[in-house]
Image (cartoon, rainbow, N blue to C red; front, side, top):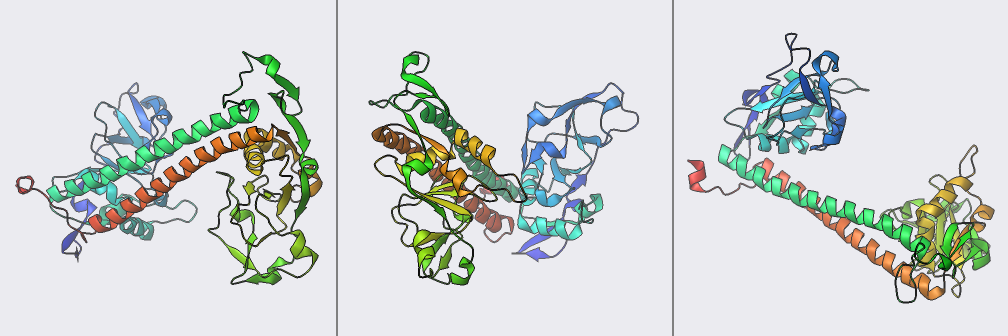
Amino acid sequence: MSGKENGLPRVAIGDLAQINPESLGRGTPLDFSFRYLDIQSVTLGSISWKDVSVQRFVSSPSRARRVVRPGDVLLCTVRPYLQAHAYTDWSEREDIVCSTGFAVIRSGDKLESRYLFHHLFFDDVGRQLEGLQTGSNYPAVNESDVRVVTLPLPPLPEQRRIAEVLDTADEAIRRSEALLAKLEQVKAGLLHDLLTRGLDKIGRLRDPEAHPEQFQDSLLGRIPREWRLAAIRDCSDVVTSGSRGWAAHYSDCGALFIRIANLTRSHINLRFGETTFVQPPVGSEGIRTAVLPGDLLISITADVGIIGIAPDEIGEAYVNQHIALARLKSAVVAPRWAGHYLAGPAAQKLFRERNDIGAKAGLNLPAVGGLHLPLPPLPEQRRIAAVLDAHDARIRAERAQLDKLRQIKKGLMHDLLTGKVRVQVHQEAMA
């Protein structure tokens, strides 16, 4: 027992559970076979079973010693801030042994295992473990440290109800993560198909196997016969970048100053979470580096080849020396087509090949201007860009939903695991 929180007693884990109750000893048969769960196979409560190896005791790693039973909680004691904890929610899997890098916690009759498991990802337990860990390069806690970690302890039926609520939140998060992963896979397929086969006049993908006559070989590989190639410099009115010295013009307000931090590899829209403002200099530098709607922006230092397209509502904005700006000819190129193509896998490979390897990696403006774009007829460019934009919008919406679910769970954890909000439990469950 260690005080109270919101009317609930705080109790040490060692008073509620067994720690490392079973281990493989010297008497273990040499041919004993088991599944070995190590730290690398666990990420934030999720076990990657494809990374769980089958071992025989005679040849198993020396750390493969702790026996795991259904319902056990595994607390990662090595670098605990990475939260590679797990709950053994399987019933069909037997002969599981985990690394000594875990503390195996087997709950007694006053502690619900899932309630404990959720606490391991709560800030309160994280802070306690951080205060107990030793070592700088390889921080860890030991078994005696785990025993003294405390948590608020409501009645067992209430613990179960709290675990159910948080389990439901976790399931919603898992479903959202799975959908987001699927959408990302679909996007990869769309990029490959749309950027190499295009869409014909009635919106269908061209088929290079059924209609090889509709395709041609090019510097960029096999492309539709209706497409042509052009270097960025030949289909742009301007190819430029910012210069050094803009730090002298930083301001608390004014025009947007676009940096690499405003570009993202997940889509070609700009992001403004880290916004810098400038009062631009009078003269050629301010004129030359001004951004207009539809401008193509390319990172040319550090993380080379991140693409952005200036939106219609950009307002007054300027680029720094780490970003190349190409003002595409609107009669020839749809900016968002160019953005999607350059952010796609084939163009990104070209960026890597042209990246100047030297004291400081990067691309110069002639190299940027020499990059080739495939140019379908303008209406087709717009059709393709519209499909990819719509898919990106769906990905962003699902990512926002996932962020919202994670915030909701964080709030639930704070309220329920501290006892700040008590859950209702049916009277029969309390009996």
